[in-house]
Image (cartoon, rainbow, N blue to C red; front, side):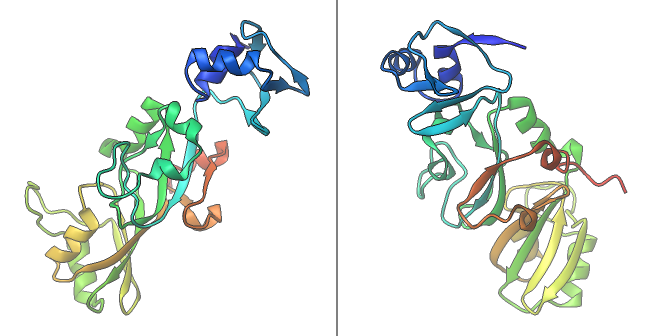
Length: 240
């Protein structure tokens, strides 16, 4: 159980500077259980707190854990250079509370992207030591062949990599599509592996991380949701 002053709560949840949050409270913009609170110094219990501001209910969250179905032509950067950043797809409050992508997808790669403001979580999910599998569906320029699948499973040598990189699993889905599961998460890895194996990646979608699948989330491109505790538990390697 913990209590914070109302202005600290609003600031922690991404509603602006402390000064601005104090003004919101004093202007009567914040209510809890239908009661308007106008004293920003008032201590409020954060456990289970739901507050109302800007005609919307917000649940207090010490940290946020999100998953976005990333569309194409969005950059996974807080300072994008050539395309809009993925943060523009989220409520403005998440930018204020320093939410950032967990790893990166290329601007033209679509699919599952985790986002959070929890540094240890971001580090753990990004660490190659955890061997968290990531599943991709790649559309190839040339037809998929058994030889291509075998090469990706055996491993290909990439520039600047000391040892060959191999897919954890790889299987053909259709004439021009394959599913490839990787653990390493190297720069442009799927695209570079396909090129090294003699094909070319025409489109790429990440469909799963750990045991959490994009299909189970039922998100359209550009949509996001909070991760539940049960979904968070799936972001680990399978124990089977």
